[in-house]
Length: 406
Image 1 (tube, rainbow, N blue to C red):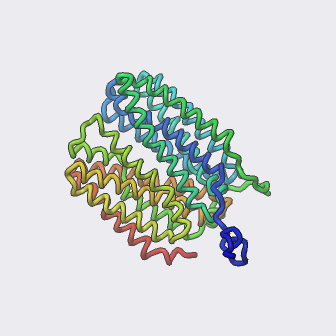
Image 2 (cartoon, one colour):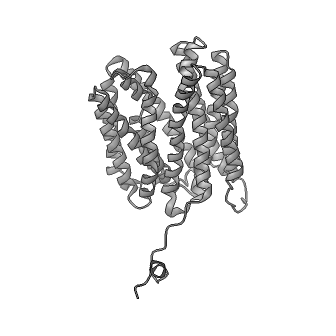
Image 3 (cartoon, rainbow, N blue to C red):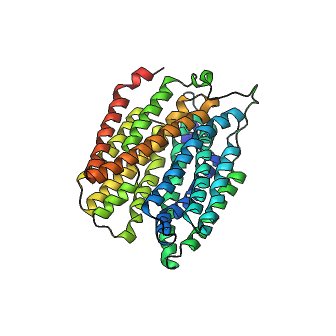
């Protein structure tokens, strides 16, 4: 009689099935998704709200966004080490999501750019506070054999929120005749649901009590981060220099003839591809070389930059946008999994905090340079510079990693 699959699985030497994805990972993904629906609904409408309802100029809008992002960068570098020092991730993540939810009514109530700035700073403090502890919590909860899939799943669900939010914003503005404040009040609901789900649906794994409190950012403890970790940080920084703000995708589509009312569809389309790609490529990261997969993601970004540099029609721009979303799906969860793989378990929060700080600074620099190139030279120069930086990052991951192997 032919042995069944179940009987063969019990034979000596048979490969055990992969573990199931923990429910807490699904919950963390849904927490991210709900907060992104809330945040992106507001952020997709905020520039036009400030311009038309509050009569702010472009400089004020840029300053509000820049100060908010800079605030998030500063907080990121502290939240991860704090979670290591306390030996707990969930309380800081919960506080970060709570601040994000608390900021949403302030946008609806804002009567001046100063109040919008205050709401934006509170929102970004929350984002900076939750990111590193949440990613460290994913690494703590996920079995090592499916860690790439876990980060891919969380990133995929997060990105679902990133396109549902703007789509919901468009729908609400159409239904309610451009009533910004009413749309902002709707954003309060998924924000609160996000906090409740984290509070009730995620149980932090038990850890042995710390013998003593440590300072994770002391020289002695930072020296425990291996050279492979710093290689991941450096490569991610160069990579991010090539991956400037997605706002330039919108500007490119507008230049290609897309009507202003439909420009949010650019980010929706990019995030759809991103969300679809993130989980399967996260699973793939558990079975193949991280370096090769990262090189593939850089190749997708390189193609996107070249298509967007030379494309002039909306169909060609759409291909570039889709390739951009593909590279995000291939790489963002992968980079997080690479950090989790090489960082000591008790320093994961610190590792993610430093990683996020370097990537965030690189994103700010990249966006400023991209904007200067766009204005002073041409849109093509912006994307061609991104393509050149892709080549530099590819050279780094293909030629340098042997020096960081220990």
